[in-house]
Length: 168
Image (cartoon, rainbow, N blue to C red; front, top):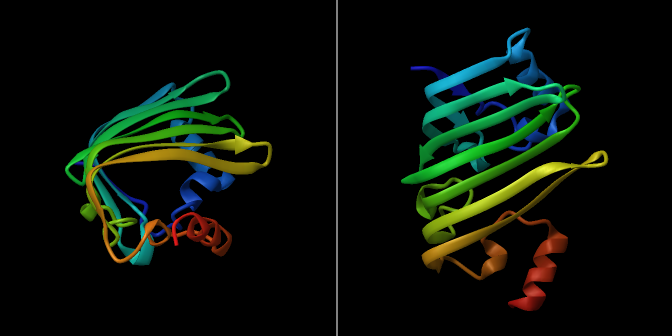
């Protein structure tokens, strides 16, 4: 079974780095399509705890503008998918990451702070030269552990101050 270990890279380097995106395009070489079947992928997580995705299936397909990517797998008791496009030059990126029925306690980013089942959507792409991410998370049967929403995610100081003003 194929296994890809991306755990040695920084969490945002996989999406934010032009060289990493160019390396993905290089996987296609002169071919039109790369298919993935029943792979295991290890993604970097906070404090060295990786997110492991099993049964990854899908592929990359070359287009005139770059490549389309569609990958689906299982993690944390639910499903996760990644769909989008990567530009030929490695600069343009439009990716949507979705998850359904994920056990919060099994996810490295929120496991210590949240219990329940998560559905999520994260849209990542370029806005000019800057990388932008927008998303939402729905929690079923959820419970915050160890504090309010400001403790839930790894936020900048400025963001923590804004959240604390809404929910001290």
